[in-house]
Image (cartoon, rainbow, N blue to C red; front, top):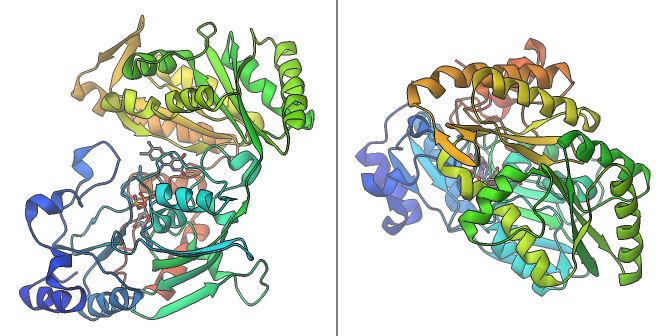
Length: 474
Ligand SMILES: Cc1cc2nc3c(=O)[nH]c(=O)nc-3n(C[C@H](O)[C@H](O)[C@H](O)COP(=O)(O)OP(=O)(O)OC[C@H]3O[C@@H](n4cnc5c(N)ncnc54)[C@H](O)[C@@H]3O)c2cc1C
């Protein structure tokens, strides 16, 4: 079906990107065989890794691959959680890591022009230095701009500020055939033909290689404040969220977090969360234009939460206290990573979260498997972690491989079915990749998937760009 990369092709690749940017060493290629999805079984070693430095080099690589029918897998920071950048059919891994320049931060247009290999961390720093603000905050800052756009990444601040899609105004992209195309630009509006820009956002590297992006920035909020609110149970916590929004407070982020994962992370980091009672916490982050305004908003939030049964409202108002709270929240993944099999990112209508999380509890009991669940309470995006362990009296008890392997498919199916029943989608921000591919038909019908396949065929008639992701063509 696909041609193997032979010496002649390697010579051509070396000519395009330089010998120093071609990796053939098997040990080194192991790093390029997987993303952050936990199971080693999904890893595939490519025939070769190439690291272009310019769009023209990317175009030449694609022309070569299209001519020879060699699969190419674009790769950013490899922080993906569904095997999206795994070279399923071998071939070429095209790593954007050398295209890491922030080309411009245009203060007049509040717009950044960046290459696809810029990390989120470097981007945040440059934007902050320019006195501006990039609101989306997906949790892993080593992700790269191209990967974030290709997955339409979200993060905790989506409730107020939206997802990556809401900030991408223009793209430069190399088609699978090697042509360079541009969609949008430094513009706020466009009704000029089909909106191909938005088709590319979230296309998981299957329609083109993103090489540059124009990204909208905003003025920074003047003041932020984090509130930690303990509740006896999850339902009370989650039922508070629509009341907040109805009470005319739109927080920057609202996360619900079970106390068990906070305890584990406290031990992992040797740091203390500001409060210890209750089974569930809401972490609410507010932003405002003045101290007076943030005091007013905090007051409304406190009143609504206490009325709904919260034990207390803890305020992290100094930068140090905020840093501690956000650090503990962001390190939960690391603290439980060794026992985590998969992180789901089901999104249900906001009013369905509590019922969906209850169902997670039922499935957890049925299969006797730990499914710690937390997430973005105000936008319906729920992160259930499927664990290779049980959680008993504060301890993580690993379960035998044979047991979790036997159970995992049924656990996924029951949760995806519940998601479907509630009008949700199986991925709200991580993408389908290869891991969720078997479940796409849970939420999309045959005609809908056929339309997607038709689009793929228009962009990539030889099916060489990231084949086997989202759906199979053969
Ligand atoms: C601890 C942790 C926390 C996370 N938190 C969040 C979160 O809050 N919100 C969220 O949305 N995600 C989150 N993620 C998931 C992950 O960070 C995102 O999916 C991110 O967008 C992936 O970016 P990446 O550069 O690592 O892409 P990769 O993993 O390298 O690739 C992801 C997909 O994008 C494609 N791709 C990469 N670069 C390009 C390009 N230049 N052109 C075309 N296609 C390309 C790949 O082929 C692949 O299909 C988290 C992950 C971890 C490990």
